[in-house]
Image 1: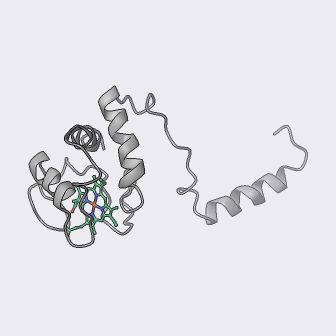
Image 2: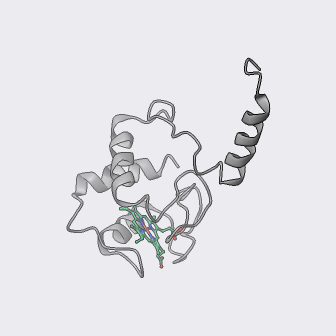
Image 3: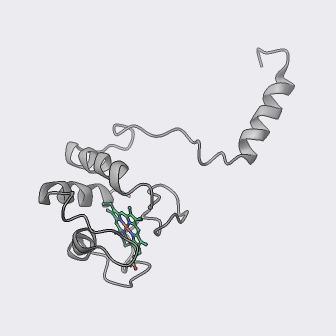
Length: 121
Ligand code: HEC
């Protein structure tokens, strides 16, 4: 440790730990996640429209279920529908329960990009 007052750093570290270190974990870049251009575009859309309700990189629940590994499961966790592109597309276009419909906001292309990104989770 180069700092003489490393005790301060330890206290700071512990404080950060207890204030939810996961929340402030550094955001990975698209390159670090090895996203291709379509997936990166999907991530951008996700951040704009979906992130406030869905956690992408932890199993934490927000207003909606975590989408970590969403297409690696056989069924969607809440509705129990098969976890495939068609069902996910319907969900995004029509909404369900507290999940809003995005038929006005998103184009087919944007939904394609979103799905490509969700497959990387
Ligand atoms: C206002 C909060 C909210 C927003 C914003 C939102 N969702 Fe949801 N989402 C939900 C809720 C609540 C559910 C559970 C709905 C159900 O099946 O009854 C859900 C379910 C889902 C599911 C099924 C997951 C599972 O395991 O059940 C997917 C996939 C999904 N959302 C994708 C998206 C995408 C993509 C966006 C952005 C375009 C988005 N959501 C925006 C609230 C939200």
